[in-house]
Image 1 (cartoon, helix red, strand yellow):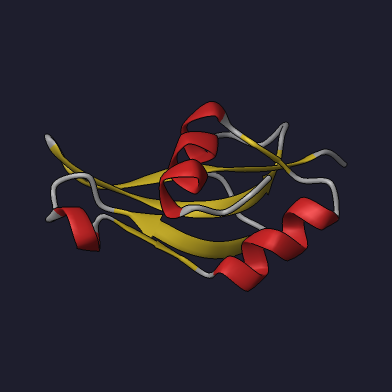
Image 2 (cartoon, one colour):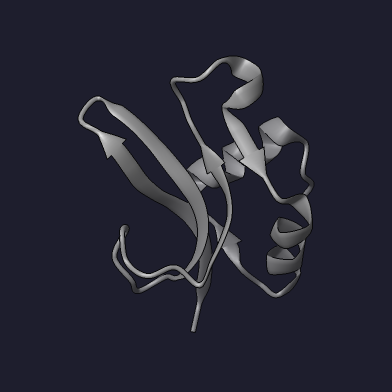
Length: 82
């Protein structure tokens, strides 16, 4: 199993928010997640947009989970080293 850290979409039309989740890379975007580790709300104010559990993120990165391009950018914004 190849684990990826990626976004899972929620919200209404034109009002999205995303959960940052760990999933099997073969599962669909909105499929069953292994673990939820945060959320990303692009419409919120700057300080409330990204909320991540840094301990869980680092633990999954240590286990070999690969972040998607968007999640990689979000981790860089939060200052979490890869």
